[in-house]
Amino acid sequence: MKKKMKDIFSLKDKIVVITGGSGFLGSEFALTLSNIGAMPIVLDKNKNSLQLLEKKFKKKKLRGLFFLVDLNNENKVNVAIDLIIKKYKKIDCLINAAGFTGQEMLETNVNFFEKFEKYNFQLWQRSLNENLSSTFLVTKSVAKYMMKRKKGSIVNIASDVGIISPDHRIYEPNKRFNYKGVSFNTPLSYSVAKSGIISMTRYLATYWAKKGIRVNCVSPAGVYKKHNKKFVEQLSQRIPLGRMAKSDELNGAIIYLCSNASSYVTGHNLVVDGGRTIW
Ligand SMILES: NC(=O)c1ccc[n+]([C@@H]2O[C@H](COP(=O)([O-])OP(=O)(O)OC[C@H]3O[C@@H](n4cnc5c(N)ncnc54)[C@H](O)[C@@H]3O)[C@@H](O)[C@H]2O)c1
Image (cartoon, rainbow, N blue to C red; front, top):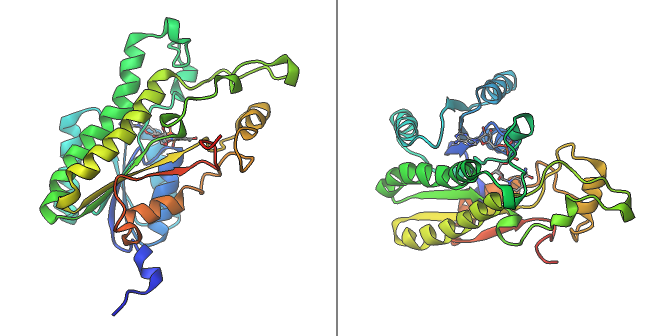
């Protein structure tokens, strides 16, 4: 009998590991997936955001599991994944959303947004570690269990700036528009790491094609989070749909790529950018 169309998107009772799952977008994915019947397992190194999200889940009576773990520590990653397997016997989907977005850097002395010519080497390495190597480590740990079942879907979160170069002008002051500029930008390390994520996605998609593991990625453009109004204007002018994304506008792409609705899709980069990368 043919499956009902709505069933092909079903993630009911699926065990979904979400890295960076208590971050801005990761928590949105976790709440959405739990709301549609999946079992999200949130891995994050930020104790505060993890506790806040756990409280939110409890208040809403939603299912979810929360692990405090640094995903750049291979041993700790393996311990967490082994614990999940012990409890649930399987991992259906992995969403790699952990990233070093520089948010915490705004509050420290080290400048994540320093000019390239002066860029701190340790910071470059940290950015590559957190934006790229953490995805390598978690994927490696989860995939060995997916291979045993010959089943699994991996969704990596890349970025529009992994495809195109950022338009540096949106961060810089411009007298013509009475624009003072902003204190952040897109550093090279971030773009390079995101291109790496897209490349990793294609590589692993072919590498595991016969093993039942699909690997795809989602490339969002800027998601609105109380940004400076003038900055939003600058960016929006470069987006055919004329605005930044809302935080819930990636959920459809995530559900599609995790579920059977995308059973014949692998190695794809689903660009969710309001058309940003067309221009
Ligand atoms: N927000 C956007 O506009 C946007 C746009 C394009 C792509 N992205 C990507 O989407 C993903 C999520 O972005 P976000 O806006 O939610 O960022 P965020 O900073 O709010 O969340 C990232 C989370 O990853 C966690 N993390 C980072 N390194 C870790 C590590 N080593 N171990 C454990 N946890 C770690 C952080 O603690 C944080 O909770 C990132 O990969 C980001 O690059 C975001």
